[in-house]
Image (cartoon, rainbow, N blue to C red; front, side):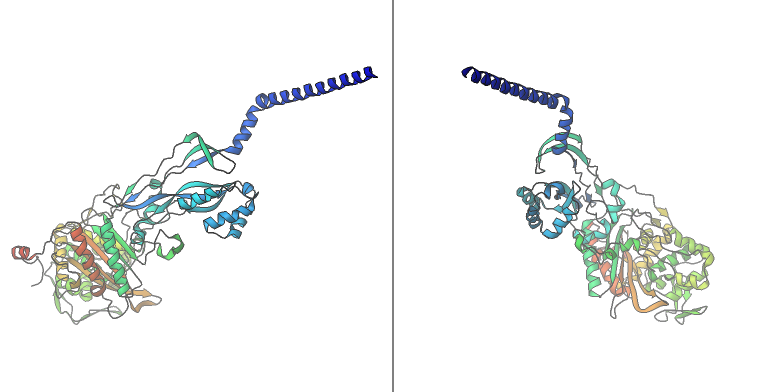
Length: 570
């Protein structure tokens, strides 16, 4: 019996030993399989779960004014994302995330569950770093942060129409942001990182490609003048209950756009309030009939033709002129006037008689050379070229009304460019918005003597007795022209709807700054350009001349030495 027991015990030991040997052998074989045979596969599987290639964000280039002051900058923000497959394992924790993000928990859960088959979904773009830190502190599996950049505009609505704005992906949508998007946009980099089970980056593994940031852009805009023009235009539009308004300031020497403002405006920092009808830069994209502000160019065509001299007399009695079935009127009967008085009193009859005495082709060529009917080439997105009908299709009444600004359409930028030609001795500069943009040579569009004569005539227009007296600036000589345009509508020109304009330059002794102002549909009894637009010019130019350190040319001591300007009426 004892021998049988001993034999069974030996047999059991052998079985156990054999089982242990087999188990050890299986473990050994499995270890070799994992460590040698399947090493690459398993490493790949591990990497797939914890190694990720993430983008290195590249910030957009800064936009600055001519002094180097920032006008558009990119600030770092966090974007909250999630892996739906991981988050839905503990869906109740989405409520915590929703509370921190300030969003509806039900909507957030629906967004994640609708994308359950994906590995990536945005929970909220562009949150502050503080909010991002709070989300990260929750430690919700599958929820992570991604660094991005958000565009910020320090000037807000003051420069919105020039700068435009970017979308949430930092791509330009309007204005300079759109026109120079390729220049401003950076190239994202990439790196490989190791994440933990919560999606947090533990350490960087490998830099694949460095980020290439966008290039900075310096504009010709002067922030000081931009603020000044915006403030005065907005005040005028509000005071007169107007529908809209625009203003442009150019450097007469080289065409630099120093300021460009519009009303109504918008704040590009608050995308929730953006309205499509406010995006466009009216000063560049909208066309208007310029009215009497075009009369100096009618006079220029007459002087350039050689048929007329500044002292040439025109009979405007009895204050009306019949052209075909149409009657052209002045406010009153000015009688026999010279070309300077034509501008001072803004005679429609005198301008029409002048235009009809000039060869149609010569008149058209003068206007076309001055930039009417063609874009300025500034490069601003959506720039309008205006309209100037070919002289071959003109009727007599077309020539007559063209002389005082009807039947032709221009942008505010075009009108400012044409006045810059007068200010710059007949050389019309090419407008530009960017300082790095090559200064294109100006076009000689009229004789220097003609331009100087026009400056003298326009200076008389802002003296007492002229229509633009409210455009005067103490200490400086100013030259300019008013315009009051009846707006067209269905069936023709409408009653009670006007554009009020003023275009001018200063200092008249050596013009440096050119400015045009337009106020659209001022309400009430005051709607003439001299009443509405001219004061805006005066208020802005008063500050602009001082900010630009342009010395006065109309101090009492200077007047006693130089006397009145040539061509001014007594």
